[in-house]
Amino acid sequence: MSETMAWVLAGLAVVILAGLGAYAFTLWKEVRRREAFKRDEAERANQQCLYSLDAIARSMISRQVDLVEGSMRCKVLLEIIDPSLLQRTDFKVFADVHDRTSHLHTHSARKELSLKERLAEDRQRMAVEAEFETPLVEAARDVLTFKARWPESLK
Image (cartoon, one colour):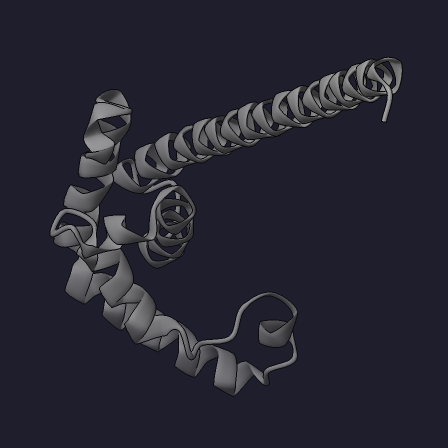
């Protein structure tokens, strides 16, 4: 192999390595962009959940919404933010109420029930609400405290 041929091959190798490096850099930037997008989406989702939690908790405290219904909604929103939040003593009542009422029909399934069946389910809901009224209102207040201290309250 001649010296000229060796230099040509070395130059070609440098060009190929530079191209691969540029491609790797482009891929690295794309990964960073996607990670930032994912973080922003999670933050937007959390903010939306916090906004909804605030409205529901205030409605529960002022009795503008059925406590069982508010509890179910709070449970779902807290799970979206972080499923482990329902393990906290402040929010455990939401999971307890859900466990006691998850068998009850909602939305269109409720409309398909007979009047007698609907009334029976309403009595069950009212019994659960009466049993958990005080803890649910306290949990709603704890939700407002949680939101006010966000994001430190997540820890």
